[in-house]
Amino acid sequence: MPADTAFMDKLTALCKRRGFIYQSSEIYGGIGGFWDYGPLGVELKRNIKDLWWRDMVTNPPNGADGHEVEMVGVDCSIIMNPKVWEASGHATGFADPMVDCKESKARYRADQLGVIYAWDVEPGADNTQAEVHFAFVNGDAASYGNAIKKAKKYAKKMGLRVVDEPSVLPFTSGEFAGRLPFIVGPDVETPGTLTEPRLFNLMFETFVGALQDATSKAYLRPETAQGIFANFKNVLDTTRVKVPFGIAQVGKSFRNEINPRNYTFRSREFEQMEIEFFCQAASSMQWYEFWRKVRFDWYVNLGLKSEKLRLRDQGPEELAHYSKACADIEYLFPFSDEHQELEGVAHRGNYDLTQHAKFSGKDLTYFDDEAWERDKANFGGDKAKEKTAKNAEPYRFLPTVIEPSAGADRATLAFLCEAYTEDQAPDENGVMQQRILMKFHPKLAPIKVAVFPLVKKEGMPDIAQAIYRDLKQHMNAFYDDKSAIGRRYRRQDEVGTPFCITVDGDTLKDGTVTIRDRDTLAQVRIHKDAVRDWLRERLGR
RNA sequence: GCGGGUGUAGCUCAGUGGUAGAGCGUCACGUUGCCAACGUGAAUGUCGUGGGUUCAAGCCCCAUCACCCGCUCCA
Picture 1 (tube, rainbow, N blue to C red):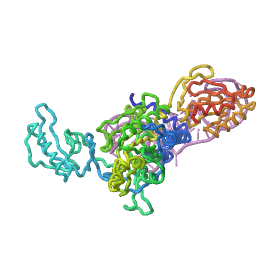
Picture 2: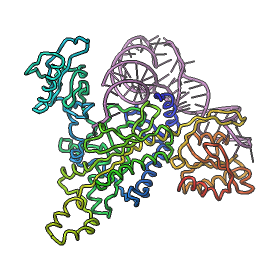
Picture 3: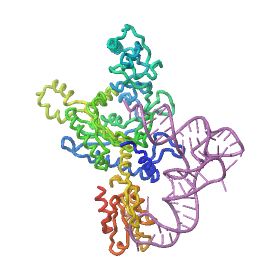
Picture 4: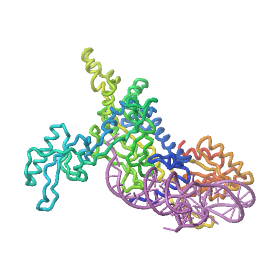
């Protein structure tokens, strides 16, 4: 499907008009990459976060081993000791222009790359462009040697003169502007895989304390995950969790995106819903498969049923070097013709704990008491052997981590896109009219129920008010007695309220009300005292 | 980051140098009998922002910000 600009225009207009999403600081001209949620948007997003917490933390499904999944939560500070980001790898290389290799996924500091510039040859007999240069890492003899080797091989193949000591120019000399297609990267064989040098500074800097100098520099976290890893030992020491278990966190993260785009999809301030699930290496793939499915099904169950949602396993070339597997849960947003990531479920090995153990100097290993108690008799009471065995696998180890990392704002946007619907509904004369409605799953709908008196007389408003006051103790309810009944229904359709209750003449006689369904327009009539339970059953609460 | 486009009422938009408009929405009053009612009345704009040209700028020029589209990018 091509990008549907008209759809996004209509959706963003509705989101503004009805108070879902505003541009941040709009009265001052806005600020790129930042967005605010309005009165209805905050309800929608909170529903998403609350359901995630409920479904993943307080009441997760049974685990890969058939047992209850053990989950606890944390809520960490946004600003952490800057060493956290050295350990995580986020801090390295951010200050310098970097060159990426699209093929090998290697990243080089641009000022450390040299380029063998030796053969500027005429086009060959077949008229192909023969200009090729070979990049290497300065000061790395092996890298230079490798480049020379590739250069000579190439020269031989092309029947060119071999130069023993070819001239070398810095990558940043300016000589190679626009000539990237002819440069072979240090770790690949074919030219054209290097990107232009770019300054990566995706972390927001700030200063802790009133003095702004180098020693007070800190960062707004670019992900919530590291707070979890940094607290891994605290959670182990102060709770009774046992591997396998997970730690969850919902919170704001910040990335200085080079180019924020596509409404709220790529924001510079955004909210994550992350789980770090700690398990044994031997069972980690089972847990990976478990979370991969659980997380995909979660979106499906909340309404992303369409073919637009997909689960895509990353290819080996996409994986980080420490990762064994990663799957992206992706949604085909109307603004793009490609699926975009909502969540990544990653097998991270024990990379993060290893890094934090190394940088903090703290022991972050886990000791499996149960396994030890079960097996220790095998060591025949030999204290020395016991001691050695206790401090090694399988009794003491750094757990392997499965990380389902979801974007709360991206999920919110996906649910908004999925919900937006235009259909035809009859007006009072039975003539079909266009109707705009948001088909939110009832659990996600910002307003669960609206209560109306059919007309503002004969005591109908009083009865409707009483029903409303009762309902709002249990769910987000809305009362409206303005203008005609059809208009009120349509207003609720547009914000996705799944049910509307109307008090009419029959209510005065027998106490029954109508409940009108947003999607089908169908009405059922039930006693007003049964309304609360009827709704709670359908709202899953 | 590059190129193109847009910016006027809450939303959608008209307005090519001479008194800021329409539709929808919102509010008030009256009416109301289940799917975008009607009548009457009302509020809302430093025309994105800052400079400049001009007797006069929503309109022309410069800068800037934001958003959209395409490329690029997304450690």
